[in-house]
Length: 153
Image (cartoon, rainbow, N blue to C red; front, side, top):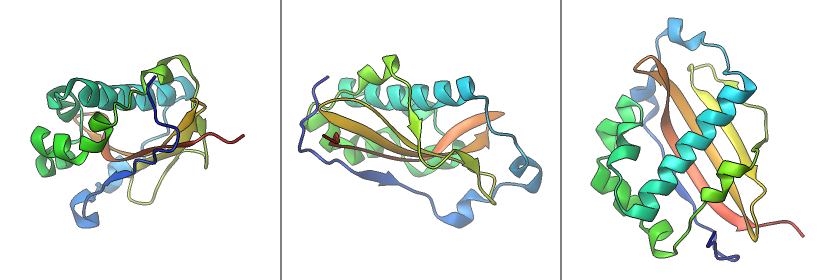
């Protein structure tokens, strides 16, 4: 993994709250199981990583929620995450690690699954904030905030 220890890359993609209105019936979705949540987080972040490493955001784009896809084209995603590609940040090591969640994942009042946490990568820790909404009958990303920070000593 090539992560520059002092690099702090923060990218936030968020949608206008009104465009994220989730019907009340969907807001009652239950949290995924522990294993399901870990798979959701890892698959989202690894798809993001693959896009950054290859420069091809088409697959990552296809896995996003419909509102996210409508707002951000693959080209716009590539431009937004340019710093990750330029710095050769590769977080594929997370596939072999278990995430730590802080605070505990929850479904908010708008029906979004909110997941915040980190992976104990070194020399820099991978920190993430992910929001998912029900889209195409499954949880899909509607917001991603990922950065690398110096691991605690």
